[in-house]
Length: 426
Image (cartoon, rainbow, N blue to C red; front, side, top):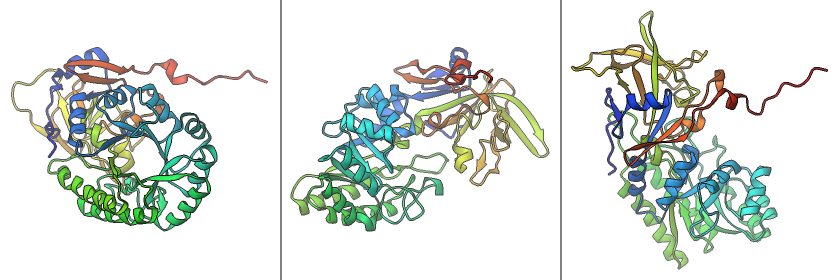
């Protein structure tokens, strides 16, 4: 079972041994910080699988991609930009296993060019993609991402299976896809099935069974099956990790049955995103106002949903801690507070539930100038950051072997208007 630091304590003075006050003094706030030791531990958790393929959309800074590559992790890319990120981080586009796999539901024109240029393996999420791949790389190999007809996720917005999901090839279209692949001499060598983030073992057994059924339709050309991603991490006290031994054994049993049927080895991949990076990430913000609004007490920060969008998108819960600017010598009383940001939007609230309902959190009494840390923020944090309200995106810092390394500088006004111009009148 994975081990974790305690993200549920409401007082924090340091991150990975580095005092928070020192981090803010050098780099300012708000700022994202990642603890590399946690990422390394999560990679080790998955060592039973033949291949760990990182879904970089969770956190795609090239420094983190580089470190994962050095841990023998390969990568998934969902756009031409992510392919280029992977190349910049040193990933080889081909090899065994494929260093980069392009996974999407469509191939746009830029992606088409880079797939052709780098001869990328493609995980096809629609029948049309098979035709398009065959046109640009006839004779290529491909994986089919199958929608089994059911899904599961911690939010409807993270549910990636079933008839309401846009993702994957509908399970009843497999034969049609095989026909299209034959027309273009495209070999279907892989199967991928992912039904959503937060998948539990009950749903996983259904996924394994569904994938085996599709594998029987595809036949002996298969050499790889992918367990997809969606491994949960605890955001709240009382939540637990999935039993990875049981998780692996379910997939391994499916793999072994397919090996026996086809008479050759089948490689078993897993495709985590959030699992590898979520717990490594911290968003440090400064409390800039403390005010009462009726019965609600607000802590207002210099970070908003432009920095961390998960709460406003689907009511995501993040552990929150306080780092007092002047350390307290005794226990600090708690108070129920609403935590919000600086944006000119009523929805700029970090303590909200799905549907936009404002919630309170019991936190230590704090003052303007103290720091508030949004924890377990390494996945779908900075990657979804924006410049809304003219805000600059934060720096990203990596703590590695006891030292802080800046892996992205804070944006400037010049960054904010880059690419814009004022045309002449007339």
